[in-house]
Image (tube, rainbow, N blue to C red):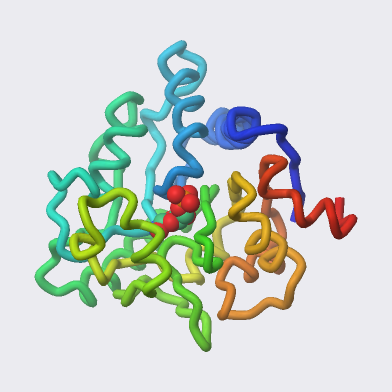
Length: 247
Ligand code: GLP
């Protein structure tokens, strides 16, 4: 694991975007794993700038998003497909046929999960996975559990995740209670991982995930065993790591 310090959110976003951009430049047919949440929005903004200035070409890129809420139609403002369109896809030259995101309206959500894993395998796996981290250590929507959930699966969101995500909805009642999420296998098998983490409110979980024991109780801790994982964090998120003299 390589840890990169950035002074603030903007610097973190730029550093992470440079890693993603290098990947796409070196391999225009990159299979990109993408995340939602506020952490990667700045990184996406930088990628949009590079694409619009002609420096970066997404036309041959394939993308797989980590997760989607179960039951939210794509036109719902809080659906992750809508989030991705607003924050990235609508502003770059990615081929819409190469965009993959779990279908939150699938009649058979479990079948949809199994099919999603097959699609990832068929594309040769993920070359570079972008990740954020939840306050409880979740990646995608892999919630803390007693074992690592390997496959794409339907998950019951924990009360803390529902609480954290209610800021995007009118009320807590409107936050979906279930989601479809890529499992730990596809994430860990990604050839390269870039985790972005910002803000002091993430300092404890970032410290625990990177320096605590590897445990499914903190799903992001699995990243410790990944051979090519980049963590790009700002000073707020790094505060506890610095305090413990880890960097
Ligand atoms: C959401 C997403 C995750 C994301 C996390 C953190 O629930 N499913 O992929 O990493 O929460 O979000 P944020 O970056 O807004 O803190």
